[in-house]
Every structure is written in structure tokens, then in C-alpha cells.
Length: 174
Image: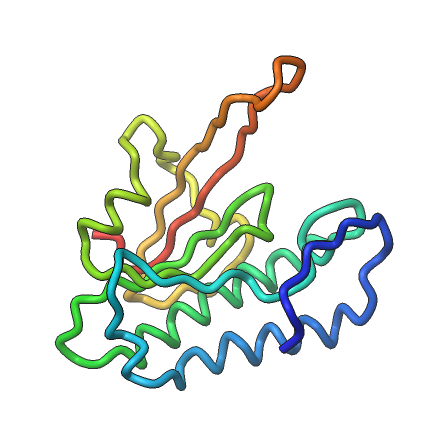
């Protein structure tokens, strides 16, 4: 798998089909991880989306590429769920970040408390009645829950507007 890279130029990404196939292989390989991975210290462990940022963000990004990237995150999360040792309390989730899809990730949380402290700041952030799975035509496993959140961050400088985005959480959310 090629390295995860932030593309600073405005050039069209090269080799998109090859890179998306590699992303699919990465997602499928998550189901073959060693059981020792699920024994970690700390609150959480994560994998960022391993691809060029220009494939999912910027003027040359295509909606089909974004959908493929989001589906890869769901597939990786499902693979980890199936590879998890029985009796483990690890929570397996992934978050699809919009419009900054490059910052999306698959996460393992040691327990529900760690997940809740990071993922769900309060009900006022929720996006009820909406589904990214329905909007983008994603395939979600039956065990996986979905919850959307609105995210508004204050501007870093006075002359900038605030950042407004969405975070779509999938996995073992309760």
C-alpha cells in the first residue's frame, strides 16, 4: 500500500484506479490482523484512510472515489469486527468526515467510556433522520450502527468563517 500523503498541489491524481484497488486490499486485509492487536494500552488505536488526499478532496476528486473510500472504511471496520477475539471489550468503529474525507479513520476503543468521551459530545450535535448509507448507497453490515453529527469549529483567524462539517460514526456505538 502506498503511503498516506497530503497532496499540496492542484494536479489531477494519477493512477486513481490502481490506488483505489490498493485501498480495497487494505480494507480486506484488516480482517486478517493478529489477535494481539486487540490488546493495547490507552484509550484508542486508529488507522487513517491510506490514500492521496487529492483522491477524496479538492477540485479533481470524484464522488465515486469518495464513495469507494467510505465503503473501504466500513469494510475495514467489518473485517476488524470479525477478527476480534471472542469476549473482547474492544469497541470497533469508523468515522467518515465530511467535507474533509482525508481525515476519516477506523478506530478501536478500549471500552464504551473511551468511545463516548471522544465521539458523542451531546445530542445537540446529532443529525437525526439522515443516513450517509442511504445518501451514498453504501453497504453496511447488519451489526453496524450509524450516527451522524454536525461539527462547527470556530475560525482560527478573525477574517475566516467557522468550519462546518459532518462526522458519520459507524460500528459499535452503544
